[in-house]
Amino acid sequence: MSMKNILVHLDNSKTCTQRVEAAIALAKRQGGCLTGAALALRSITANYIGIQIPKKLLEDQQQLIDQAAQSAVDSFIQAAEEAGITYTSEIIYTNAARAADRLAYMARSMDITFLGQPNPDEDNRSYMSQLLEGVLFDSGRPVYLVPYIGRMKMIHRNAVLAWDGGKKSARAINDALPMLQDRGKVTLLMVNGKHSSIRKDHQPGADMLRHLKCHGIDASLENITADGIKTDAAILNFLSDSGADLLVMGAYGHSRLREKAFGGVTHSILQYMTTPVIMSD
Image (cartoon, rainbow, N blue to C red; front, top):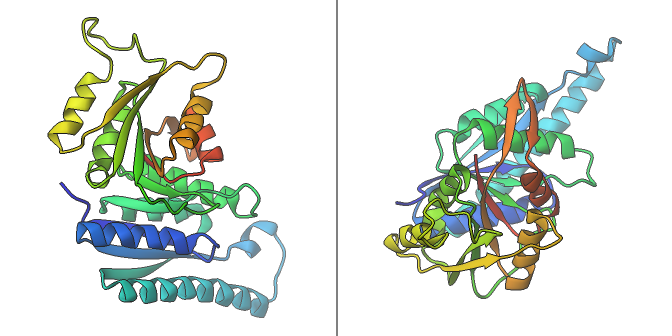
Protein backbone atom coordinates (compact mmCIF):
# COMPACT_ATOMS: atom_id res chain seq x y z
CA MET A 1 0.00 0.00 0.00
CA SER A 2 1.49 3.31 -1.06
CA MET A 3 0.69 6.75 -2.43
CA LYS A 4 2.13 6.83 -5.93
CA ASN A 5 -0.07 9.47 -7.56
CA ILE A 6 -0.10 12.80 -5.73
CA LEU A 7 -1.75 16.13 -6.57
CA VAL A 8 -0.81 19.55 -5.21
CA HIS A 9 -2.78 22.75 -5.77
CA LEU A 10 -0.56 25.61 -6.91
CA ASP A 11 -1.13 29.32 -6.41
CA ASN A 12 0.81 32.48 -5.54
CA SER A 13 0.11 32.37 -1.79
CA LYS A 14 2.93 32.66 0.73
CA THR A 15 2.46 29.08 1.93
CA CYS A 16 2.35 27.42 -1.49
CA THR A 17 6.10 26.80 -1.26
CA GLN A 18 5.64 24.74 1.92
CA ARG A 19 2.68 22.92 0.37
CA VAL A 20 4.87 21.93 -2.58
CA GLU A 21 7.73 20.95 -0.26
CA ALA A 22 5.43 18.63 1.69
CA ALA A 23 4.07 17.04 -1.49
CA ILE A 24 7.57 16.57 -2.91
CA ALA A 25 8.75 14.96 0.33
CA LEU A 26 5.92 12.42 0.13
CA ALA A 27 6.58 11.73 -3.55
CA LYS A 28 10.24 11.04 -2.76
CA ARG A 29 9.42 8.72 0.15
CA GLN A 30 6.80 6.83 -1.85
CA GLY A 31 8.65 6.82 -5.17
CA GLY A 32 5.59 8.37 -6.75
CA CYS A 33 4.58 10.91 -9.37
CA LEU A 34 3.57 14.44 -8.36
CA THR A 35 1.17 16.59 -10.37
CA GLY A 36 1.04 20.33 -9.80
CA ALA A 37 -2.20 22.04 -10.85
CA ALA A 38 -2.82 25.79 -10.97
CA LEU A 39 -6.21 27.36 -11.61
CA ALA A 40 -6.46 30.27 -14.04
CA LEU A 41 -9.90 31.75 -13.49
CA ARG A 42 -11.80 33.17 -16.44
CA SER A 43 -13.06 36.67 -15.69
CA ILE A 44 -16.85 36.96 -15.57
CA THR A 45 -16.97 40.45 -14.06
CA ALA A 46 -18.82 42.00 -16.97
CA ASN A 47 -21.43 39.26 -16.94
CA TYR A 48 -22.79 39.88 -13.46
CA ILE A 49 -22.37 43.57 -12.67
CA GLY A 50 -24.34 44.60 -15.73
CA ILE A 51 -22.08 47.35 -17.05
CA GLN A 52 -19.75 47.67 -19.98
CA ILE A 53 -16.07 47.29 -19.11
CA PRO A 54 -13.46 48.24 -21.69
CA LYS A 55 -12.25 45.17 -23.51
CA LYS A 56 -8.61 46.17 -23.00
CA LEU A 57 -9.11 46.30 -19.22
CA LEU A 58 -10.62 42.81 -19.20
CA GLU A 59 -7.82 41.48 -21.36
CA ASP A 60 -5.17 42.99 -19.09
CA GLN A 61 -6.89 41.51 -16.02
CA GLN A 62 -7.02 38.08 -17.62
CA GLN A 63 -3.39 38.31 -18.63
CA LEU A 64 -2.37 38.96 -15.01
CA ILE A 65 -4.40 35.94 -13.85
CA ASP A 66 -2.84 33.69 -16.48
CA GLN A 67 0.66 34.96 -15.70
CA ALA A 68 0.16 34.23 -11.99
CA ALA A 69 -0.91 30.66 -12.78
CA GLN A 70 2.08 30.16 -15.08
CA SER A 71 4.42 31.59 -12.46
CA ALA A 72 3.09 29.13 -9.87
CA VAL A 73 3.63 26.25 -12.30
CA ASP A 74 7.16 27.45 -13.17
CA SER A 75 8.10 27.55 -9.48
CA PHE A 76 6.69 24.05 -9.02
CA ILE A 77 8.63 22.68 -11.99
CA GLN A 78 11.87 24.15 -10.66
CA ALA A 79 11.32 22.61 -7.21
CA ALA A 80 10.35 19.22 -8.67
CA GLU A 81 13.38 19.09 -10.96
CA GLU A 82 15.72 20.06 -8.12
CA ALA A 83 14.22 17.25 -6.03
CA GLY A 84 14.69 14.74 -8.86
CA ILE A 85 11.12 13.41 -8.72
CA THR A 86 8.76 12.35 -11.49
CA TYR A 87 6.24 15.13 -12.08
CA THR A 88 3.67 16.64 -14.41
CA SER A 89 2.02 20.06 -14.34
CA GLU A 90 -1.20 21.57 -15.61
CA ILE A 91 -3.05 24.88 -15.73
CA ILE A 92 -6.82 24.51 -15.45
CA TYR A 93 -8.71 27.30 -17.21
CA THR A 94 -12.15 27.70 -15.68
CA ASN A 95 -14.52 30.20 -14.14
CA ALA A 96 -14.66 30.60 -10.37
CA ALA A 97 -18.02 28.84 -10.05
CA ARG A 98 -16.60 25.62 -11.50
CA ALA A 99 -13.10 25.75 -10.03
CA ALA A 100 -13.87 23.46 -7.07
CA ASP A 101 -15.61 20.93 -9.33
CA ARG A 102 -12.70 20.88 -11.76
CA LEU A 103 -10.11 20.36 -9.04
CA ALA A 104 -12.25 17.69 -7.34
CA TYR A 105 -12.64 15.85 -10.67
CA MET A 106 -8.87 15.84 -11.10
CA ALA A 107 -8.36 14.67 -7.50
CA ARG A 108 -10.50 11.56 -8.08
CA SER A 109 -7.70 10.06 -10.15
CA MET A 110 -5.10 10.71 -7.44
CA ASP A 111 -4.16 9.04 -4.17
CA ILE A 112 -4.12 12.28 -2.15
CA THR A 113 -4.35 16.04 -2.76
CA PHE A 114 -2.30 18.72 -1.01
CA LEU A 115 -4.20 21.93 -0.32
CA GLY A 116 -3.70 25.04 1.78
CA GLN A 117 -5.75 25.99 4.83
CA PRO A 118 -7.91 29.05 4.04
CA ASN A 119 -6.45 32.16 5.68
CA PRO A 120 -9.26 34.13 7.39
CA ASP A 121 -7.28 37.35 6.96
CA GLU A 122 -6.98 37.11 3.16
CA ASP A 123 -9.50 38.23 0.56
CA ASN A 124 -9.52 34.82 -1.16
CA ARG A 125 -10.58 32.88 1.97
CA SER A 126 -14.05 32.12 0.56
CA TYR A 127 -12.59 30.85 -2.72
CA MET A 128 -10.01 28.69 -0.90
CA SER A 129 -12.76 27.28 1.33
CA GLN A 130 -14.74 26.31 -1.76
CA LEU A 131 -11.75 24.48 -3.20
CA LEU A 132 -11.19 22.62 0.05
CA GLU A 133 -14.84 21.66 0.42
CA GLY A 134 -15.09 20.58 -3.21
CA VAL A 135 -12.07 18.26 -3.10
CA LEU A 136 -12.84 16.94 0.38
CA PHE A 137 -16.50 16.09 -0.18
CA ASP A 138 -16.64 15.45 -3.93
CA SER A 139 -13.40 13.69 -4.86
CA GLY A 140 -13.65 10.52 -2.77
CA ARG A 141 -9.97 10.98 -1.89
CA PRO A 142 -8.14 12.22 1.20
CA VAL A 143 -6.69 15.72 1.43
CA TYR A 144 -3.53 16.92 3.14
CA LEU A 145 -3.95 20.44 4.50
CA VAL A 146 -0.98 22.70 5.17
CA PRO A 147 -1.64 25.48 7.74
CA TYR A 148 -1.51 29.04 6.44
CA ILE A 149 1.07 29.79 9.15
CA GLY A 150 3.32 27.15 7.59
CA ARG A 151 4.70 23.82 8.78
CA MET A 152 6.83 23.39 11.87
CA LYS A 153 10.22 21.76 11.38
CA MET A 154 10.09 18.70 13.62
CA ILE A 155 13.03 16.44 14.43
CA HIS A 156 10.81 13.55 15.52
CA ARG A 157 7.82 12.90 13.28
CA ASN A 158 4.79 12.44 15.52
CA ALA A 159 1.31 11.67 14.19
CA VAL A 160 -1.97 11.81 16.11
CA LEU A 161 -5.00 9.84 14.86
CA ALA A 162 -8.35 11.17 16.08
CA TRP A 163 -10.42 8.02 16.65
CA ASP A 164 -14.09 7.94 17.63
CA GLY A 165 -14.92 4.45 16.33
CA GLY A 166 -16.93 5.89 13.42
CA LYS A 167 -16.69 5.16 9.71
CA LYS A 168 -15.26 8.56 8.75
CA SER A 169 -12.35 8.36 11.17
CA ALA A 170 -11.83 4.72 10.11
CA ARG A 171 -11.52 5.78 6.50
CA ALA A 172 -9.20 8.67 7.32
CA ILE A 173 -6.83 6.42 9.25
CA ASN A 174 -6.83 3.79 6.52
CA ASP A 175 -6.23 6.42 3.82
CA ALA A 176 -3.27 7.74 5.81
CA LEU A 177 -1.58 4.34 6.39
CA PRO A 178 1.19 4.91 3.81
CA MET A 179 2.12 8.16 5.58
CA LEU A 180 2.19 6.55 9.03
CA GLN A 181 4.57 3.68 8.42
CA ASP A 182 7.73 5.75 8.70
CA ARG A 183 6.63 7.86 11.66
CA GLY A 184 8.72 8.05 14.82
CA LYS A 185 5.58 8.01 16.96
CA VAL A 186 1.88 7.35 16.29
CA THR A 187 -0.83 8.02 18.88
CA LEU A 188 -4.41 6.82 18.59
CA LEU A 189 -6.36 9.55 20.39
CA MET A 190 -9.81 9.03 21.87
CA VAL A 191 -11.72 11.82 23.63
CA ASN A 192 -14.20 10.63 26.26
CA GLY A 193 -13.98 7.20 24.67
CA LYS A 194 -13.75 4.88 27.67
CA HIS A 195 -17.26 3.53 27.10
CA SER A 196 -17.51 3.97 23.34
CA SER A 197 -16.90 0.37 22.30
CA ILE A 198 -19.87 -1.74 21.18
CA ARG A 199 -18.07 -4.72 22.71
CA LYS A 200 -18.47 -4.11 26.43
CA ASP A 201 -15.76 -6.61 27.29
CA HIS A 202 -13.29 -4.96 24.93
CA GLN A 203 -11.01 -1.97 25.42
CA PRO A 204 -12.07 0.94 23.15
CA GLY A 205 -9.50 1.42 20.41
CA ALA A 206 -8.00 -2.08 20.76
CA ASP A 207 -9.25 -3.24 17.36
CA MET A 208 -7.81 -0.19 15.58
CA LEU A 209 -4.50 -0.64 17.39
CA ARG A 210 -4.36 -4.22 16.12
CA HIS A 211 -5.22 -3.05 12.58
CA LEU A 212 -2.38 -0.54 12.68
CA LYS A 213 0.04 -3.17 14.00
CA CYS A 214 -0.85 -5.46 11.08
CA HIS A 215 0.40 -2.66 8.82
CA GLY A 216 3.65 -2.34 10.73
CA ILE A 217 2.58 0.69 12.78
CA ASP A 218 3.22 0.36 16.50
CA ALA A 219 0.76 2.95 17.84
CA SER A 220 -0.04 3.83 21.43
CA LEU A 221 -3.51 4.62 22.78
CA GLU A 222 -4.39 7.85 24.59
CA ASN A 223 -7.92 8.01 25.99
CA ILE A 224 -8.44 11.45 27.47
CA THR A 225 -11.37 12.89 29.36
CA ALA A 226 -12.46 16.36 28.30
CA ASP A 227 -14.25 17.89 31.25
CA GLY A 228 -15.67 21.33 30.60
CA ILE A 229 -14.16 21.73 27.11
CA LYS A 230 -15.32 20.66 23.66
CA THR A 231 -13.82 17.77 21.71
CA ASP A 232 -12.16 20.09 19.20
CA ALA A 233 -10.40 22.02 21.97
CA ALA A 234 -9.27 18.75 23.57
CA ILE A 235 -7.75 17.58 20.29
CA LEU A 236 -5.99 20.89 19.65
CA ASN A 237 -4.63 20.94 23.21
CA PHE A 238 -3.32 17.40 22.85
CA LEU A 239 -1.62 18.26 19.55
CA SER A 240 0.14 21.17 21.19
CA ASP A 241 1.18 19.24 24.30
CA SER A 242 2.43 16.21 22.35
CA GLY A 243 4.43 18.17 19.79
CA ALA A 244 2.68 16.38 16.93
CA ASP A 245 3.39 17.39 13.34
CA LEU A 246 0.38 15.61 11.77
CA LEU A 247 -3.28 15.06 12.64
CA VAL A 248 -5.43 12.45 10.91
CA MET A 249 -9.20 12.74 11.25
CA GLY A 250 -12.50 12.21 9.49
CA ALA A 251 -14.29 15.19 7.95
CA TYR A 252 -17.82 15.70 9.16
CA GLY A 253 -20.20 17.76 7.06
CA HIS A 254 -22.79 17.66 4.30
CA SER A 255 -23.19 19.03 0.81
CA ARG A 256 -26.32 20.30 -0.91
CA LEU A 257 -26.35 22.28 -4.17
CA ARG A 258 -22.81 23.58 -3.56
CA GLU A 259 -23.75 24.87 -0.10
CA LYS A 260 -21.64 23.04 2.41
CA ALA A 261 -21.49 22.96 6.17
CA PHE A 262 -18.76 21.37 8.24
CA GLY A 263 -19.53 19.67 11.49
CA GLY A 264 -18.50 21.54 14.64
CA VAL A 265 -15.28 19.65 15.38
CA THR A 266 -14.18 19.69 11.73
CA HIS A 267 -14.88 23.41 11.40
CA SER A 268 -12.91 24.27 14.53
CA ILE A 269 -9.92 22.14 13.55
CA LEU A 270 -9.85 23.75 10.10
CA GLN A 271 -10.06 27.20 11.64
CA TYR A 272 -7.45 26.79 14.38
CA MET A 273 -5.12 24.09 13.04
CA THR A 274 -1.42 24.79 13.51
CA THR A 275 -0.15 21.46 12.18
CA PRO A 276 -0.86 19.65 8.89
CA VAL A 277 -4.08 17.63 8.83
CA ILE A 278 -5.06 14.65 6.70
CA MET A 279 -8.85 14.46 6.28
CA SER A 280 -11.18 12.03 4.56
CA ASP A 281 -14.92 12.23 4.09
